[in-house]
Length: 432
Image (tube, rainbow, N blue to C red; front, side, top):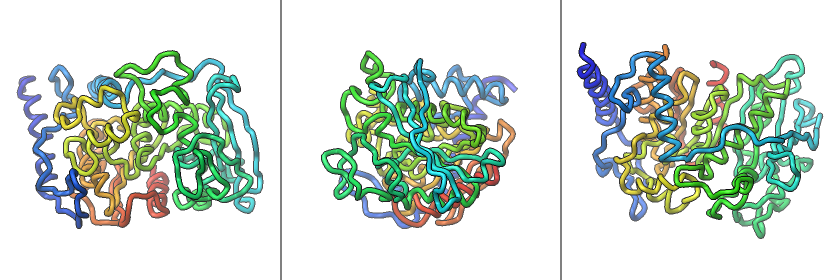
């Protein structure tokens, strides 16, 4: 077989797979589209997706060794055009301080530690606080751990009054934040998204950090948070907030690797919404994460950008210009010019297990686009020895989890992180 024919065969095989998926999918009760945004499948523009198994020089990828080379290309493209390049590794002087310990947490089932990560070792510089809950059984053998960022401060994930109230800047929220500072009324406000006792009962530890400790979520020209530790404003191809939050997650993993109660090879990184985008990029850039979970991550996360369905590249760059690198702005209304798309982001997890979840009432995040990304990453898993990693050709009915090495479900309900989602993630973790 000639090299040219092999390339064409790879292209047409991938194109045929995409065409078959689009042709067989049926909508699941779409909500009415808001003005200016598309929720109508018939109005999705025509597009051609880049093939994750075709290198930049046109060479077809057929082996694990070739995929390793292609993977380097893809990471660089995502860095330069979407998320931005971040500094490699920790800063000199980083240290960890356990600031509190609650030995009788959850009625004695677990130990809660509050650990401060001093990014430079200097108390006048930015830091982040990690809340870590570990089942008592970890004293006998290390346990797996779910690690994720939270939106409202560590005090919001459980109502226990002994958890320190976050002193960091907060996005406005009536009743729980005043003058950009947390109120006592916010304790436990996000407990439904963090079912800590259920996680502990399944034998896992859970660690979480307020994302604003790493980088506050507003367009401040990157003068606060971790960026303040660096002299220069990020260049057009350098880290936006998502890549900065990822940098913080890797520093959290640095700590977890030092804690003998945690099996550092079994740390799952998880995120919801913008933090689901973050968990995917964390899994792509830090192979130490053993499992990667995206919950309702949408545009810039698991959903295909080229579908321009629900939230679009232009909309997200307009509303949140600080999330991505400045180069991403060039693709506003020009998604077909992107050298990558999100199915290739999912493929960057291979051969590690990855889980993508959608919700029926969250068309803004494009559930179909999220499913397609998971499905179209499957050929990469096959190259690496995991055939039928997702195992289905059509988006499953609601509340019907599917998949082996690639997990997926479409939950009934709205844009949220629920106990149902967590139970599916823990089932998935149990298998892997």
